[in-house]
Image (cartoon, rainbow, N blue to C red):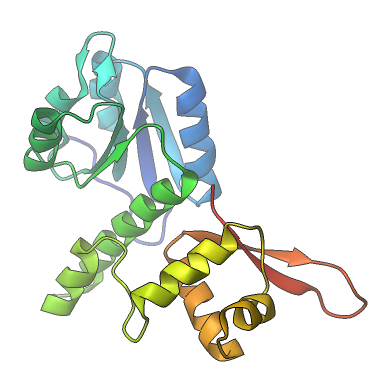
Length: 219
């Protein structure tokens, strides 16, 4: 089956959700639209998914247990469409078939929103390669490595920051004071986590003046 080409550069990225649970599909749609993607369709079966591919999605979120077949049977048809498998299946044969068959990411249910945001970040990093004539090894390493620690960041300190944030939202100053870090160092670690989608920021209004920026773990 030939699919309609994706949109021209600068237009919203288009996503297709293949999921037979309306509640889960609705959550996926809300997330993608919040992140700026256009959801061109929600398919609850293989047959509906095949029809929806004519809309030319750039990204597919693919459930595997569908009423009329297995989601992995779609992979040969998806071709060059970036596919993220989202399923409760975690047996090795299914995972192998998905990844070797062309899926670019694999998320096991249940999962947090931070994991889906990470998958979206990897998808966008992959799409950004289109702007280059050639890629470097560094480009590929950054693309293929999951949660690669930024240069100059210590893994142990990163884990200490994450552990401290489990107690609730914290400002840069609170993290620095509790962990014995300079304010600049604390900010670097918090921003690295934010860019990875593992924490989010909120504005806290307490004392008069400018609001404080609070870092909180994503659920």
